[in-house]
Length: 321
Image (cartoon, rainbow, N blue to C red):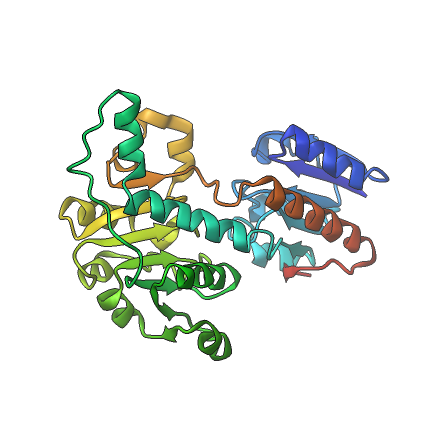
């Protein structure tokens, strides 16, 4: 098979080349598939990451394409309808980082609850004043989880260790695990009204787009903490900024943002830079998944997905042919 890999770092290239050495591999460090179409016009497999947009136009210009595989759980960057029309399989990596992302979620929460960033920034400047940096306990606080898939459940397990009360919202409910882990499902509006901390762990789609919007923020407790290690589009950024300005939201721990590529590209010149540099906002650049352990799991599963496609038996199918 001829395989094109996009947005791959040097270490990833070495791993994938070793696993797929019997095939022809083309490696591209950037995520601009459109400008490289001439180089990949006869590929059978397209291997991408979260910022690689696989549009209908791109798919139509790859006549030999049999498989699109993404090195991520989310696949909203791939046009599944266009892939299905061309009988192209689409696969993902469904469970590489459930514990990894859950741990990162709590890293953000603890940084906020203990004012870690502000304290460290001051002490590095020789300023040891802390009186205005009072934190808050997690014990006895109500944590609202939106999305109780693999990652959401790991967050719940960690939260129980801190002595937190857990409520959750999901369209698909797992009542058995709710009983085992000791949490209850509620409606969204009830979750907004009761939670001291709200953590997002849902996929991005038309149903979850801006699930936290102006109305949602209005229904929350004053001083609520917001956590998002899922997808940026789950939060209306303008509504979040307004809620931070009004102190309705007391703090936000964000690993993802709407239009985060613009922020990562333009840095201090981005319109989002003011948001991420606030004292009560902790932002990490979409790195909740980024541990050596999780990265190895991603690469291993991706290689398995590709090798499985040889006999039209690719695992982890999410759409397509």
